[in-house]
Length: 324
Image 1 (cartoon, rainbow, N blue to C red):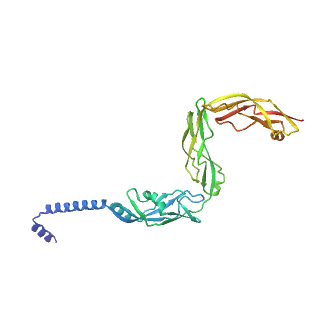
Image 2: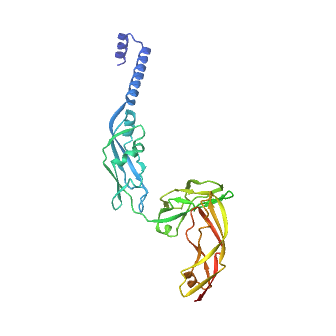
Image 3: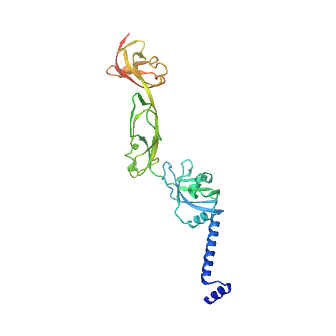
């Protein structure tokens, strides 16, 4: 064999060094050809194993089975070979929105090919174009688990600049979460808390996202909630307002002591009219019937627009009822 190669080199007028250079050139040319061809776009059927994750009420968040997503794709030869070489790789976990995951029966849910398109970049990558899915429907099993719905409480500390205050309470979205876990762990949990939030000297609305405090060995349907708080500038109006009687029977008379009470209204700035002018305070005869002490709380009709808080002093008044 060696003699044959030497004769061939001699007939071509090549030395051993020239032959090595020729082989190197051929190898380089083949590499360039291979890289060029692998970089071109091709159409091919590609299969990727997928496991579904989804927050479904009353069910585990991860499916116990896997499905192969098969689609005709357009991608580079390199990506096609890479995916086919990883045919037996670990499945990709895809988080589906609960609205996408449709219920079939029992613990079985499914996703249609039409809904898969928006998840294609997670399954195949950003450099793959999907022509169509050969997998029409993917079925997943989410085992049933114990669950419990509880409210979310904010761990919230706030202060305001002078003449500023909140309009209403801090709003959370969602204001409750679903907990999943073993029954003995869930039975003593009646609420969850946000992580601490401290905002000082506020003079404008605030909003953001708050994480929830983790619970050991318990899964929550949400890890965070959105919050918002409306803040406004206010002015205070103070005056003495008369107290009237309501629902007094025709054969009775009711006297209220004191007959006028001090009212302080907090009103959003700028003012819209005079809210004190239209304010009506009253005591209800039905409250007097139910009381033992003869003291009744002061009630009021709905406040005019712009009133965000109030204080009445005294809040309880002495009521005297006599027959006519």
